[in-house]
Length: 261
Image (cartoon, rainbow, N blue to C red; front, side):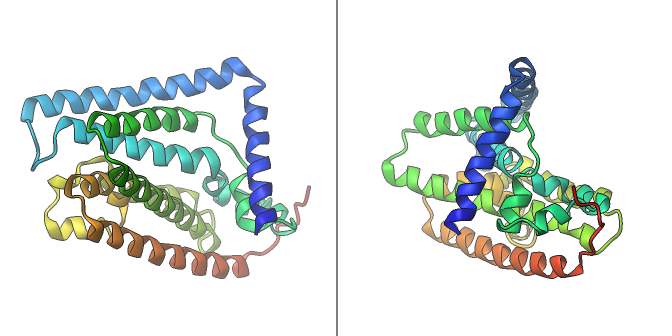
């Protein structure tokens, strides 16, 4: 396992260094994504100014939620983008390269491709969610709850993205279906959890755990709830187990494309 993690770190550094070789293109991609994301903050700022607080959620809370969401998105697509390209790898037969590697197949897959613009999400998200904590003057204990909730959200986000890609092992040319399923998961996480009725909120925390990747970390802070954090841990653990089992089953279904290169 340590060898696999070391490979992941080295390959990630190589991907970043390789992308940064074209510095202008690298920074244009990062900055353009930051500018694009700033539009969300402007829209939500205008909306919250018009309607006021939403069931206890202020504009600052919404900004914190967006920061968490962007940060988690940036982590997944910046460091694990290979899981997004998995359907195309299956169609091309290039997934063979992942399986014959002495490195753990997941780490090999994760670092097989790279998305520069994700680092725009990562940087802006980090600035916003850290600013949220500083603005509200989090204690050390509150920071701990906040960071743990974000970690759980990032793990769930990665699990769902991988599960959506694994559809391609079971359905031929499942790239479009994979993307559509991921969009279904992604959309509820773009809104404050306060707008959902309790039953629907529970649904989006468990069966479609989109809120874990955005609103729930903020809810945990607002309520200072260890119970909600524990629920997040439980849901995260279940989705890790589901993803692990489906991944193992999917690998057994793969038939080599004989396109080793």
